[in-house]
Amino acid sequence: MAQFDLVIRNALLYDGSGAAPRAGDLALEGGRIAALGSVAGEARRTLDAKGLALAPGFIDVHTHDDFAVIKHPGMAFKVLGGVTTCIIGNCGFGPAPYREAWRMAAGFQSAGEVAGWENHQGYLARLERDAPSVNVAMLIGHGTVRLASMAEPKNPAPSGAELAKMKALVQEGIDAGAVGMSTGLVYEPGRNAATEEIVELAKLMAGTGALYATHMRDESLGLLDSVDEAVAIGERAGVPVQISHHKASGRKAWGMVDQSLARIDAAQRRGLDVHADQYPYTAGSTILSAVVADGRFGGGLGTLTADDVVIAAAKGHADWEGKSIAQLAREMQLEPLATAHRILEAVPGTTAVLHAMNEDDVRTVMRHPSTMIGSDGIPALDGRPHPRLYGTFARVLGRYARDLGLFSIEEAVYRMTGFPAAKFGFKDRGLLREGFAADLVLFDPKTVIDVGTYEDPKHAPKGIAQVFVNGIPVVEDARHTGARPGRVLRRAG
Ligand code: ZN
Ligand code: CU
Image 1 (tube, rainbow, N blue to C red):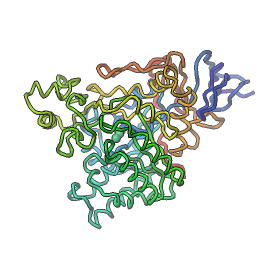
Image 2: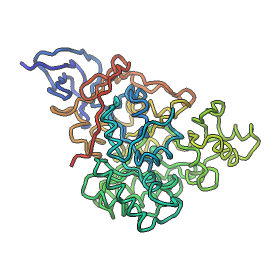
Image 3: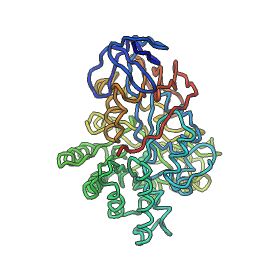
Image 4: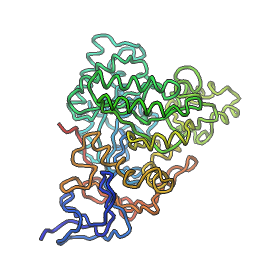
């Protein structure tokens, strides 16, 4: 008779494949799933899960937790919401080289600098020495690499020597086991890059399984051209594509997601491996500097008004947090653009919540089979971060699947587990299968829901009972156990 570490009995098993759930048991042994279904045998511990759903741990495909996994290794804001794996390095903001990574990200992180590392390999080695509570997979950040390689990163084209340096840095990341490379084509310095430069760098990933993830050049009226550019990069370089936080931003662009989704479908029919991710809210969030990056208020982020933009976190200026630019403009007696510049002079890394999307569009994108879930949470824990940092996965399950019936719970689970695991190449995660890593979430499908609001965001969701990472309990009775069993997930060869 087998002796298991733990048997979870009488759960409703959502296996992560999208299949309908079935009642059963699941046994854990040595950090892996040892048996499923009707489990006989002895166990050192038994957990009665009657009435609860058991699913693979959620994979947050879009995070900015590069520094958070080091500064806040407990990652409570993620694990209490069921997340067991974070993909870091999105939107062109990567973890290496350290100096440039910190320069780009310092503003939207809480607390101060940490001791550095040299390169991508050094970053991952550091996470292995001092593990967080979640598993981590890494994207190389194109913006970070560009900043580290060019004498003048605002230039549109790198010199031959500069491009060679960028290639060397990207190659180092690929060799270290990155699952892909990201761009942020609205942010400095990525926004200055031509398509050609990105194709040249993405080609280094061809045949490795690593993918190209992109915060596209324009998510507003230029949305369709931007999808075309992302698809062209994937097709020319021969790499899979992940469109980050798929949306139509700004009133004038609302409704365009029907066409952007059709372009994804068309590219898939041509044979490209292209998908997207989404966070389940009508507001976005980013650094305030991006709102004024092209010299106009709102600019490339869509037709945003001063009422749409609310300060999320501004270190040392808590009085600004939660106020819109329109409100602050009245207080400062300035125009909106000048108000934003005044705020940025005081706190360059100020982040904002942008009320820029339409609920119908959010639902249209979510229903589409190309969409998986990623929080895009910004871990500015001292301010009022967008509530997606905590609530993304519970909100999709509770609000969009259960309450609004957009799709079934098993479909929602699939888009957080088996689907992203397949896309990012996690060969032994994302499904309840014998031999797979025991990353698990036990949740109550009747009560699971996000709790945080834009005004009061810092709350763990309801209904997430237990979370296991590599077989170790990280959340018990909705409380963090303090365990930090996360692993680095390198690209499988
Ligand atoms: Zn982004
Ligand atoms: Cu992002």
